[in-house]
Length: 188
Ligand code: AP5
Ligand code: MG
Image (tube, rainbow, N blue to C red):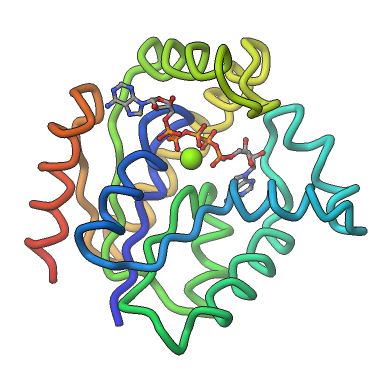
């Protein structure tokens, strides 16, 4: 089984868009920690009380909560998966270390390189048509800041541990997708 993690890409770099296309082509099981957290919020569970404020501020949810949700989702699909495509995780070195210890290191980590201006414009545009409560100018700035702070150490961590590939995420969805397919096929 293969694990691919397009984790390194800021908010709006196109992680979700590309994961959908990759699932269609390769049949991976796509898990997004952001989506898992939003599903948890909708349940109004005990866990959701803890995470709502954090997400609305654009901060990172505590790593133990995220890993618990991710592990539950992976276990639920384990019997019928061709491999996992994990979006938006790990976002800090601590998450990567915990994942490696409790599950395993991913076979490939993909980093979606995109400028802050492009990411901000895409999210502001999405905000006009979607229900993603965290897509406000203030939260976008906070998420970008959190991403830039954490991404360099995470990339450095994986550079020595596993295959790490960078793609230019500024182009059209099809241009970015071609680069991702090349990255995946160079490894598997
Ligand atoms: P999450 O849901 O993961 O959000 P994010 O990382 O901020 O990124 P997005 O999902 O908004 O963007 P994306 O890169 O997937 O881009 P998309 O394809 O949607 O996380 C939300 C929050 O949850 C975090 O802030 C944090 O609080 C918490 N969280 C999540 N994971 C966590 C973790 N591991 N640890 C702790 N906390 C965690 O595209 C965006 C828009 O751009 C769309 O409208 C799309 O149509 C458009 N677009 C995409 N690609 C292109 C393109 N090539 N050209 C033009 N437009 C494009
Ligand atoms: Mg996403």
